[in-house]
Amino acid sequence: MSTAETPKTTKTTDPTDTQVLVIGAGPTGLLLAGDLATAGVDVTLVERRPHGLANMTRAFGVHARTLEQLDARGLADELVATGTTLATARLFGRLDLDLTRLPSRFNHLLVTPQYEVERLLERRAVAAGVTFRYETRLRGLRQDADTVTAEFTDPDGAPLTLTARHLVGTDGVRSAVRTALGLPFPGGSVIRSLVLADVRLTEEPTDAFSVSGSGDTFAFLAPFGDGWYRVMGWSRTRQVPDTEPVDLDEVREIARRALGTDLGMHDPRWISRFHSDERQVPSYRVGRVFLAGDAAHVHSPAGGQGMNTGLQDAANLSWKLAAVLRGDAPAPDTLLDSYQSERHPVGAAVLRTSGALVRLAMAHTPLTRAARSLATRLLSTLRPASARAMGMISGLGIAYAPPAGSKRPAGRRAPDVHLREGRLHELLRAGEFVLITPEGELPALPPTAPVSPERLVRATWTDPTRRTAVLVRPDGYVHWTSN
Ligand SMILES: Cc1cc2nc3c(=O)[nH]c(=O)nc-3n(C[C@H](O)[C@H](O)[C@H](O)COP(=O)(O)OP(=O)(O)OC[C@H]3O[C@@H](n4cnc5c(N)ncnc54)[C@H](O)[C@@H]3O)c2cc1C
Image (cartoon, rainbow, N blue to C red; front, side, top):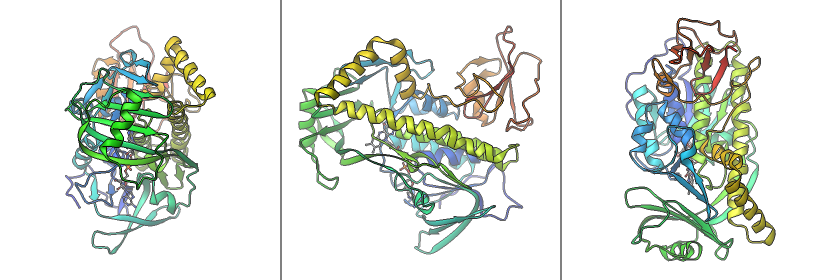
């Protein structure tokens, strides 16, 4: 168990062991636990791996909306410095999406290894006072009206029981939490025998970020910025189980067929074969227990959405749990249910997009090739179509339904506007709601707003002609506007 710094609050009256148990210290669990502890919630993060042993899930693309979420936690600039930023994403070998058009401070794709994201999130979680329990594996759980009781095996193999007010399963694709809840994980395999390697190259690629394929093969190449490249490839003629060994020759051969060159790949530091499923759990909430990240949804790596979606699940759930536990939510169940109503459709949309991307990349019948040509033409000639695709892939286009009694722009992402007190996304670093008003005005907030007036961060428009008050949620979406 790693040592934690002094928590902001300590429980004195609650008889449970901790207020929230988070199971799984991947990116989703680390962000969630860090947010909860920052909000003063007592949180225990349980992880089956020993501390320091790398998480084997391997994202490398961090999209604009995720960078905005990390900016709202003071981590984005440090993360950007660990990788390389790409201004263009290339699809199907010939369609370039110009990411500089994204309406964000982060108008690019950041390529950096997943462990860098986890390193920063873990440091933040430790500093915020999260209690970590490594080498501890969830075995089962039960819940009643007030508590969740979870059974673990501790680092010595002995049974351990912990109780909490809520439990969140961020324990990845084979989630023990999901199994303990008896939930199905419907779906199937979308692609088999993908090969993956981190390599050095003797030739510089002409494109920073390449995806290309013939329908019978495809390959994808992205730079980490430090001389290492991530390559991913697939060949219709070599479909074997994940257990089948893979060597650099196989990766080189696929690259030659898909990209026309293997760019002199050498010295792999990591090489693997895997398959990819498309699945989504029907319920993200069962009573006091929640699922987030890969535990709730998995899909192909096309579009680089998995880690990004998990981090945004966590950002959506953390403030809701904190509001309920702090007694700030007038309708706790409605607020907690909004996690399902907001995030389940996003997960479903990600499955559709990444599924479409991978199927179009594998297109080999005349019909599917025609569909790929049409998609390429539409995206390259119709600006609204490409803006929509970029909004989806970058996460900036995600919007939720306005809460009952509110109207648009409620539910939409709040852009990083400059205010008298600083940038909005900097003000969100307090982890609280931000109320933006004209100078000197304090509007009456809707009685249903899950926010305590003492915790609210107050801010003022720099433009004196702006007369509307806007209440922004801790996860950077508009909750309410005065007109
Ligand atoms: C090849 C590849 C490329 C990818 N590229 C991208 C990309 O570019 N961009 C992107 O956004 N995503 C990408 N992904 C997906 C991304 O890696 C995952 O979506 C992400 O890791 C999910 O994070 P998570 O925290 O939800 O789960 P995980 O990272 O799987 O973490 C779950 C944690 O729970 C722990 N755990 C499991 N069971 C238990 C238990 N019973 N008790 C205690 N602890 C437990 C595990 O040890 C693990 O640490 C890629 C995935 C692959 C395989």
